[in-house]
Amino acid sequence: MTLSFFPGLCPIPGMFEDNHRLLGRLIRIGLGALMSGLLVTPVLAQTPAPVFMRYPTIHGESVVFEACGNLWLINRKGGTAQRLTTDPGFDILPRFSPDGKYIAFTGQYQQNSDVYLIPATGGVAKRLTFHSDVVDDAPLRWGPDNMVVTWTPDAKNIVFLSRRNTFNSWFGRYFVVPITGGLPTELPLDRGGMLSYSPDGQKIVYNRIFRNFRTWKRYDGGLSQQLYLYDFSSKQIAEIAPFQGTNTDPMWYGNTIYFLSDRDSNRRANLWAYDLTTKAVRQITKFTDYDVDWPSIGDNGIVFQQGGNLYVLDLPGEELHKLDVMVPDDGTRSAPRFVDASKQIRAYEIAPNGKRALFEARGDSPRRYLYGTGERRGHPGHYRDQ
View 1 (cartoon, one colour):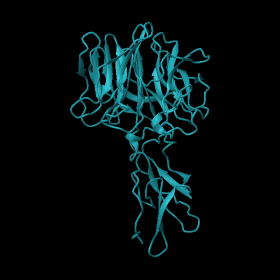
View 2 (tube, one colour):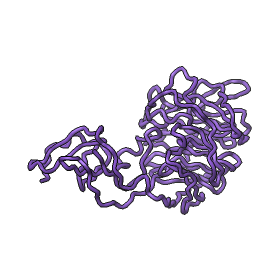
View 3 (cartoon, rainbow, N blue to C red):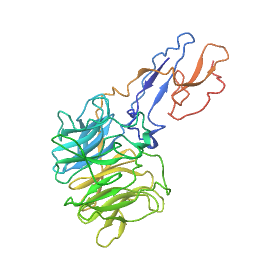
């Protein structure tokens, strides 16, 4: 059996899927079934939906983000994006080097999920890790293996999370790999999540728990994320800005640590700031409709996604700008196409006259000229359309 997919938001890779933000909006399915061969007939194309932009990074006047599986470059004021990568795999979590010369990211150039490096303006991708995941089919909520997190302040090494050498494969450990190549080395921490270095590189602020790909909101349970300072010299660790909910994505800037938290009255994830001297916490952004997500810091700003848009927070002034971005994607990943759904049929119903059939596949109930939402709708029920 084959299914025809329709234009819309670019598809999300299985191993990188951020499903709690996208399910129900990504895939539009149309199915026309012939009783003999169950072969789909082509359907009219729909107007493409806006491109979903994720995992942004910033340096100087440049912003890089992921859309449609590839990396794109735009000016920090917005405009038309320039494609940086074109491989058939998926490239995520780009991070500018502190000197702005390179971009590190996690990619799938050779099927495996690995750390890659390209010049900041695009160019040949250099593979830096060569280690397969220790889990054959890791759950999406764990995030990708060899996941780029940040750079060391001297711009010579890339810090990434890997499930290798862990006593429990559901979490990762920090590794550092030089941009010149070579074997990665472990940081002296037993586990971790998002991380940011102090300007002198002697300390870090980090999460001991990584759950940034999970679906939970307003979560106060045992996997709540807290922020910790770690001193490489004294090997001392201390919690900062305690809160029973979510504190994640720390970003160290001067004497301030910016971070993402859902501690406001709406329990909406927004940017907050922690003063290392006074220990005071103050709210920076005040979105009430959608969470701020995947913020990252550069030399003069913080960039993040929110409600399908990209925003830049200028530093040190903390002035917020929404970017008007156009991504000239050619639609190869979201164009109408045929896929084999023979192993994904969950239910069916035959029309009363026996001439047509309705099938539920991939969690939806599509038929010819009927477009679903991507949500699971359950059994198709009685088919009344003759």
